[in-house]
Image (cartoon, rainbow, N blue to C red):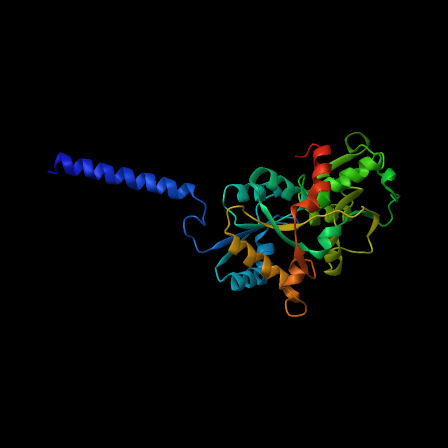
Length: 290
C-alpha cells in the first residue's frame, strides 16, 4: 500500500503535468517549439482543398527558403484569417487591405510585402454583355453581388464608389454577399444577379483560364486606384523570420518562378508599410467597418 508521502508526491506530479499541459495548449505553435511554419491566405479565390493543392509550388518554395516545413491554410472566411493571426494559429498570412487594417488594429500584425500592383489596385464592376447597365447610376433597382463583407476589392471600395456616385446601396438596390470573387463572377455570368464587383486580378485570371465566358460578360466601371493586398507576420514572430519570409517574396523572378507568381497573380513584390493604408483606414472608418 503506498504511503501518504508517495500519494502526495503523485498528486503533486499529476498537478504539475496538468498545469504544464494547459500551458502548452495555451501557447502558440512557435512558442511550443514547433518546427512547422503556418501560413494563411484569405479565401479570396475560394478555400477548397483543390485551391490549397494548387498552391503546392508556393508552399514548397517557402519551405525551401525558410528551411522549415510549411503548412498552407485557407480559413473559411476573411475574418477567420484575422482571428487565426490573433490567437497564434498562423505565423504569416496574406490579407486584403481591409482585413489588414482590422488585424493591425486588433493584433498589431506587421506588414511585410505586397505585389507591385497592390499599390494601385482596382475593383471591377461587371454585368452581362447584353445588359442595359453601363454606369453606376444604372444599378438603381437592380440585384447586385459583393464578395465577402470584409473584402476590400469585393465590398469596401465598390460600396464607397457607389456612395460617391450618389447611390445608396441600402436603399437603391438589392445586394447579396457571395463569399469570394469567383462566386461573384459566376453569379453575374449566370444572371443570378444583374451585376457585381470583384478583384481585377481574379477576374482576369478567370477569363484567361477559361473559367468565365468572356463573350457573356463586360466591365462597365473600374474604381480609382487604392492600396490592397499584403503579406503580414504575427507581431511576435522573430524579426529574423519576418525578414527571411519577406526576402523569399522579394526574390521571386520570372521566368524561373513563373508558376509561383501565377499562383500569386503578380509579377514582382515590393516592401509594404502601414502608412500606405491611411486612406483605406479612413474609408473603412467612414463606412463603420472597423
